[in-house]
Image 1: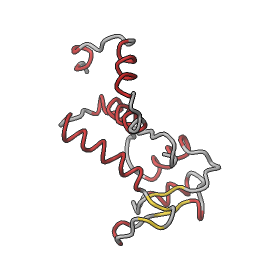
Image 2 (image 1 turned 45 degrees about the horizontal axis):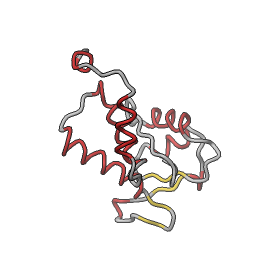
Image 3 (image 1 turned 90 degrees about the vertical axis):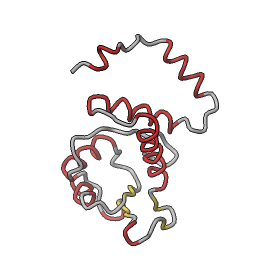
Image 4 (image 1 turned 45 degrees about the vertical axis):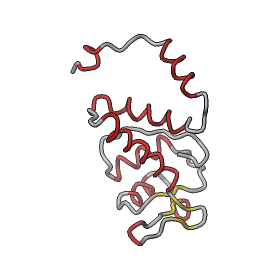
Amino acid sequence: MRRGGELRLIQIESNSSDNLSEQIEKHIDPSVKMIVTDEWHAYPRAMMGAGIHGSKHETIKHKDKIYVRGEVHTNTVESAFSLFKRGLTGSFHAVSIKHLQRYLNEFSYRFNRRADDGAFLETVRRLAGFKPLTFARLTSE
């Protein structure tokens, strides 16, 4: 997620450094000025594998109770994750792997339009233009 840009939540196979590196190469422009992450141990190797070196990768060390260093923070993406987690525990309760990307898309959409007063009307207009998803198709293997 680019600060001030749109959020994209993407389902991935695993959080291994090789898999993360592949996703970084796929979704992040090499000319990016800075990538900020928390201290997850797979990130440094993933960044190196994706060609992100030196000061382009900044880390926030939550375990040391460091949350912000000037422009270096993960607060925005943590806000998006919080919205997603509240939706899961408060509304949906259980999510299958089969439909996980649909939930991620929905919460990306919600987060990206959180300040938009007309989001409800836009959602209804879009839904009216799609074929219905039948229960049989939704629950099929």
